[in-house]
Length: 285
Image (cartoon, rainbow, N blue to C red; front, top):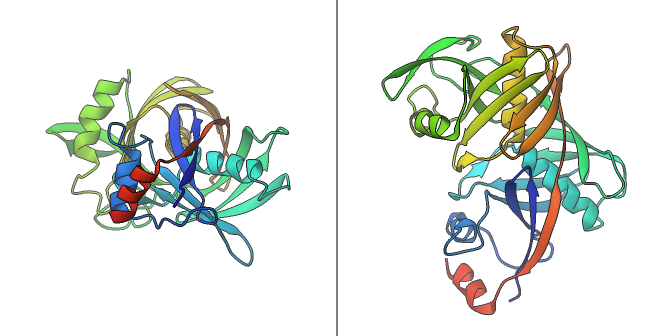
């Protein structure tokens, strides 16, 4: 049984694309963990499984490296859109794609599909939509304790849950310190993605990210949208910002109805054909 995967990255956030129309293997928590393991497998920040072809739209499933399923990924969506163009599934400039976190609209901005604009849906700060425990309210600038330290937290859903903490300085060690506690904190019944954010000026912010089910990542599409939304909601920036991350930059725009749009690039790295020995190990899991 030959197993073929395609490797892409968006701003250093790397994914493997697994096309069920070309592979016989059935993905599950165990073999996803093995594939994403950077020592025992191929290594990746996640696996994009699809396309699943429906009557109206194509859909995908997004796997985290711990074998859990994510509702949505901004970098993942852009990568998958590039794969659909590369593999010949899509010829149109615009189309809609279904994720577990809702429908997104893709627009290719160049011929090879490496630069894309994605309509990521509507931001929501309501506690029951993020979700956050307690009575229904918009979770804005609330005091929350992570690891015995109090932080001013704003929570937002981009189809998946985020908590954003404005800070004077941001760094990898700091977001990892916070994220180890915040991801599994009692406030968040479905766990949470965490961004710490520094506002440079009205049009620029910087973030560091600790993703639910993945840990530290160099860049995040939904996290960039979440942070931009929070900065705008708090009056710290305008509605159009460049989000700077260790892996690179994304342009994010928010309209008057809180719909969020993300523009950025992705890159194709390689096609990977697994050995028969490794394929059999995956099949047995």
